[in-house]
Image (tube, rainbow, N blue to C red; front, top):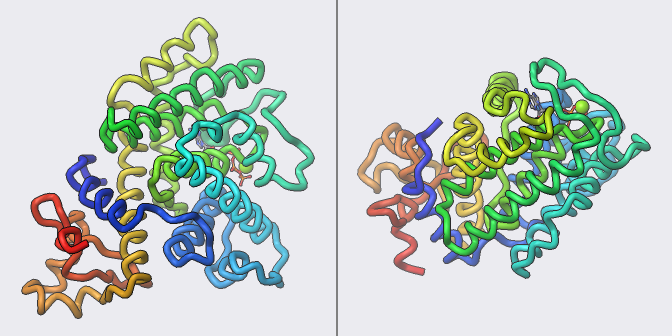
Length: 342
Ligand SMILES: Nc1ncnc2c1ncn2[C@@H]1O[C@H](COP(=O)(O)OP(=O)(O)OP(=O)(O)O)[C@@H](O)[C@H]1O
Ligand SMILES: [Mg+2]
């Protein structure tokens, strides 16, 4: 995890905005295809469902899938939910409204993911989270907690960020805490993880940012769970007694808390911004080449360029296992060289 700072975020954001900002999230669009495929693969992997890249590409290009397994069904539903709700979030961003951030939308994301379950709406029973010590709140309080704590804070932080009142790093910290809060409330009988991750990305897209991929393979999944637990421990049992709901407001308002989740989202956002920027530039005809090819003319070794990518000083994207970039994507004095030419 990198130390979260706006120093690495700002040059990326200002370059992205100069390039026209995030485009409408449709998968026929090169900028989005890779991110959405990887997000689907990882998000269902967190829950233990595996779909290979080839089958996923078939899902995304709407071909008939031969393998009609549970895993592919999960991927098809995830893809449908991401496509629909990321589109709505994007239009909310373009139209500058808040109409999208409602509990009706959260419920519809969940029912899109759980097609065939015949169970809609918030849970009407107690629930336990497998492998966790945290006790989610009584179901009678869910509607109140989602509307008056979760959504109210999202709307406030998004307004503040869009008006330039808070830095992106502060906004990421709020989003991280709110994702943890959503999972701690665990409002549905099933699909809480996937619904929460799709909604997290809706918050980002509705603020003009690309979606993040929370990685789902063993080690990363454990880090994600540990990050949720870290916030659970701060909450204590304040979700279980109405008199202590006010504590949630303080936890969300305080800068800090949810350090682990903030780090996960920060690292993923840097990765998504870089992928998005590189793909947009490639669409505009800019050559993005393997790092080993550009190193000599830049006067560096390939290894030192790799270190610069890891430190966030060179914007790059991964093609298979190879990092690819261009010399105009080097960040110097808080700016990429290319920015001065557009
Ligand atoms: N300690 C924890 N505190 C809060 N939330 C947690 C904790 N551990 C796991 N979770 C969340 O619970 C989610 C699992 O809940 P649930 O089964 O309802 O969701 P879903 O899994 O999307 O579904 P499925 O297993 O059906 O694919 C995890 O993805 C994670 O987001
Ligand atoms: Mg589940």
